Image 1 (spheres, rainbow, N blue to C red):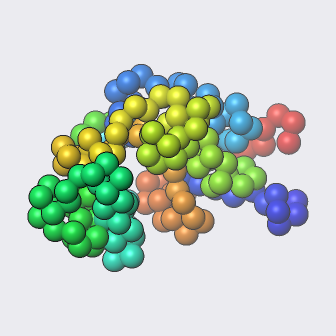
Image 2: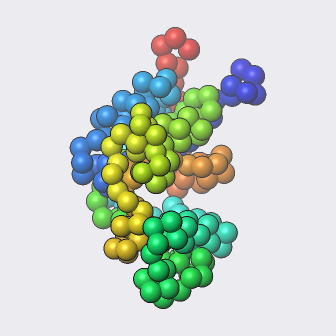
Length: 193
């Protein structure tokens, strides 16, 4: 294989809202239909400690998610200071990270390792934009998620957007090793490979 089509692995998770809405089969079907291989799969009830280790703790990531919250509030004319008591993106990001951890530990999730050419980009493309209102029809979030970031911010909770998908090779490697032991990952050849 050339480096442009080099197979890679990524981490994918069906979040509590995807599980409780009965969308596991549909979501897995879309991954396999795309031609990607599922090489590890398990349903678990994550703890808050496991979710705390899943999400990055670095200041840049936390500030970035706080900045997204500020942008959403600005777009929908929500007074962030009145709502959250601060406009500091890092402080807001810490709060949003806490909402994510609480939500992700609220019900079972399905953890998945996917393998294939450009798996990270392909899974993110299948998932669609993180904000459901911006997700294209034909993506998982575009077809099945109706949550609003503005409503989530106002209610002090995470956006319910059905799935998580690793953004980078480094993030994928961390998440795969966090959620699966090496013996739980099963590479194989698909028919036609």
